Amino acid sequence: MRGISKEVLSSFNAYTDKDKLYMPYTSWTQERWLNDTKVKEVTSKPSELYGATRFTSGNTLYITEGEIEALCVAEAFYRSNKEIPPIVATTCRVSFPMDMLERNKDYFKGFDTVISLLDQDSVGFKQLVWLVNTHPNVKEFDLLGYKDNYELIEEIGYEQYLHEMRSGTKEPVTEQKMASWSSNNKRYIGFQFQDRNL
Image 1 (cartoon, rainbow, N blue to C red):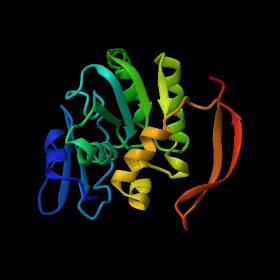
Image 2: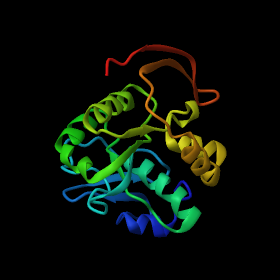
Image 3: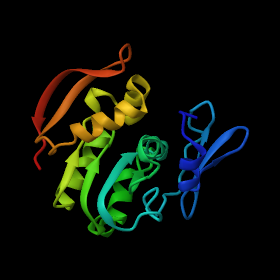
Image 4: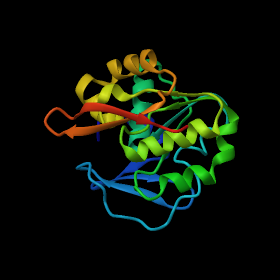
């Protein structure tokens, strides 16, 4: 699925059967059909960030929204040098991310820098604001106007994605992007700005 290698899946203890991709946390497992759609809504909230048990401290932490997004970013790094840096994710279930961040507030203290690869939508924005208000050194990659990491990867490929991410990571802007979504070209259009009130 999405070109994610067995090596990357294994590094996150993720696995597939004939129908599904399984992405386990400590207490429960996120599932996805192999046709790349969500299996079902869930009501139990994971206690940790996805991938957090693999990475407990380090120089740089990358954070995405959605378990499969973390796997995609890991694949980009793995294809480059066969290594995967600390990458975690909040779950893609809309009502859960903020609670997950609050529960894991101390986790971020183990990293010198946090790089946000969060979705470019209102949920991702709320998480970014939380990070900026919580950690002293947050950087952001704005995904070049695409909604999430994989939509950008699908357009330009894993190798170019990693190049763009490394060169395009910067200080978070102080305005919120308010834009309409273009389903034709999979990009936000008509950017306007409002104060983020950070």
